[in-house]
Length: 358
Image 1 (cartoon, rainbow, N blue to C red):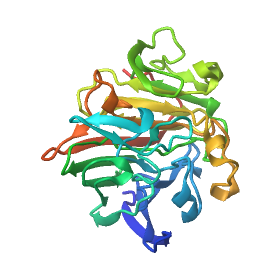
Image 2: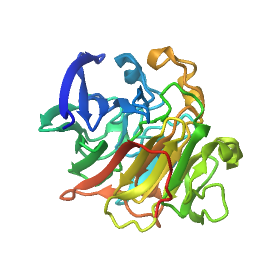
Image 3: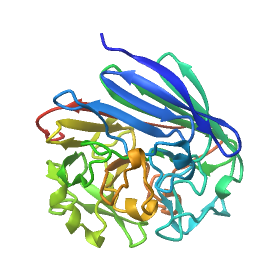
Image 4: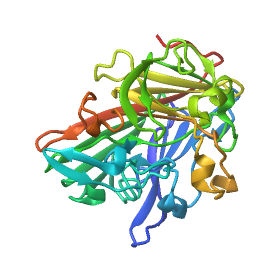
């Protein structure tokens, strides 16, 4: 029977003196290290087809890297993941102006300058679950309402890393959380992910404008570079993507009904490692990390490695981007008495083939 446990070690202190811990989750031959700061996924150690264990998660060695973390490496994004157009929205007849922190446009991005990404969460261990909690106060980043957040992490015996998000509020407010961890299945320092094979359960994508804001229009992937319903070698499509900034698009999940389903899969042929993404959410952002070098500006990360553009891949399930401003998108507003709930999981394994998702 394989080892299953959670342990913790001290990792550092925030600039205002709060203790930061790294929690080590071991199960199914996989080890995942996460922080109570920003719910960061710091490390994912996975064997390859020959049993060689490598860290596949892009990140930083030190706490100082995560306290800054301009690329949101491994961190939770909230209250609202992705972008809010113009960093403003109207709710119940009142306009709210939120933080304009998007380096690629005049928008809110992934929750703001601090958001949930740069907050120290309270923690407890319940069996083999790590439960992280935080209260975001009324007015944080310009959002209304006190929001009580719970993020639960669990690594199962069959190497499935489960993320569960819940939140309640005392005022109507948008909530849409997601984790921004990036992987390279050949190893975090491998470089270009063009040698990864990707499959997805998506026949439609959202149309975006030049500022990465959805127009409200939904496009079929049929006959396009975004059709991953059969396995696609990323290197065959990345340089041909519209805008020449790689894969950075929202894919709608076929048959979405709120139940957890397989939405995407990536595989690295040489090592045999694969990652399956499961989620209750209606869409996922597939991102080939084109802006890594721009955001990190040459800053050395793990083991002194300088991450370059397209050095990792991100699959981030959540609700529709900018939904608070697009009437035809399902609402992300949570009201008093309601509970926001979403769940995603990432299953790691080794194979020699990449099957079509059906």
